[in-house]
Image (cartoon, rainbow, N blue to C red; front, side, top):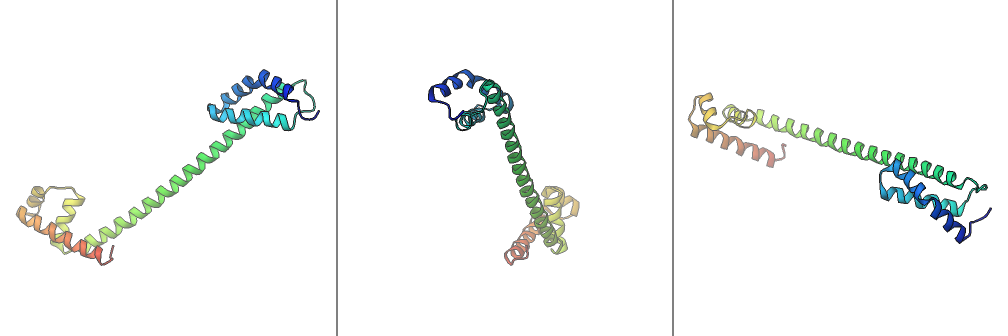
Amino acid sequence: MGHPTDRHFTEIYNACFQDVFRVSFSYLKSREDSENVLQDVFMEYFEHPPKDERNIKSWLVSKAIHRSLDALRKRRKEIGIQRKSACEAESGAIEKNKEELEEALNLIAALPEKCKSAITLFYMDEMDIKTISKSLAISESAVKKRLERGREILKEEIKNGKC
């Protein structure tokens, strides 16, 4: 049969569009995606109608199911690609953070012993100045001075490109 006439197409569309949309929506759960499938199915019907029009509703619904399944596969593939990209980016960031942490730990390890212990207790063990003072048996002002010196040495090392 060739292309349907405008009147015939309109009749078929009015008789079947709700069923085609409903079937598509049952798969896709998205109004926009279901409307796209509806449009694609009726475009295909208009451009390439089936030879036997006796079961046109079944043909249209079958096309809607296939298009909906295709849309679901495409959606899953896109989600998989997005997840993979996110995982790769996260993995790269974690690796970079590990490298930066390793470099920072190496710089701290290279500090003079007095500064290294104060910096380690303050930043790594999260002790406050008073606790560090008691732990090292030195005054609080001495702890502050060692932290200050340690920070200055670290800043200088970073500035010179060692980290």
